[in-house]
Structures are given as C-alpha cells and as structure tokens.
Length: 75
Image (cartoon, rainbow, N blue to C red; front, side, top):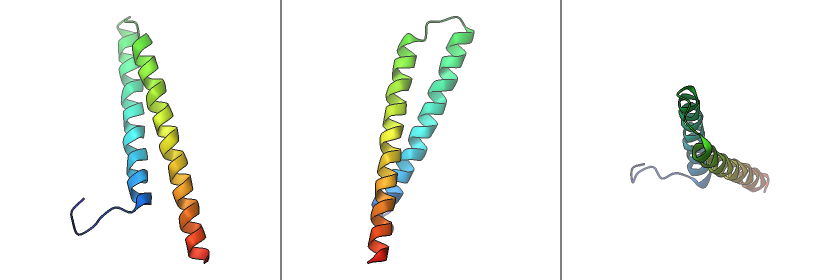
C-alpha cells in the first residue's frame, strides 16, 4: 500500500485471508504432485495443517473486525 491509502484493520486481515488461502491451495497442489510421484508427504501434511490453522485464525479475526465495525456503525 502507498502512503496515501493505508489499510484499515479489516482490509489488512481480509488480505491476509486471501494470502493464506493461496498458500493452502499451493500446499494442497504440492502434496498432490508429490503423491503422484510416490514421495512421502508427511512433512508437507504437517505444514498444511499449520497453514490451515493460520487461515482459521485470520478468518476469526475477520469476523471480529466485522463485529467491531457493525457495532461502531450502530452507535
């Protein structure tokens, strides 16, 4: 982002969700490719679980930010 347009907390966490979703998708594709080549995917599955946990945290944060913005609009 440039200096003229800073992200709001909601925009920032929404961007993080999008980035985390892309990371999860890439990891799933990598695991599928490794599986096709008959390689072990144990470490990659562990990494995928971590990425999915991170995605859930960001999704939860989006929900909290949406609640905050709804609450502030009602005031």
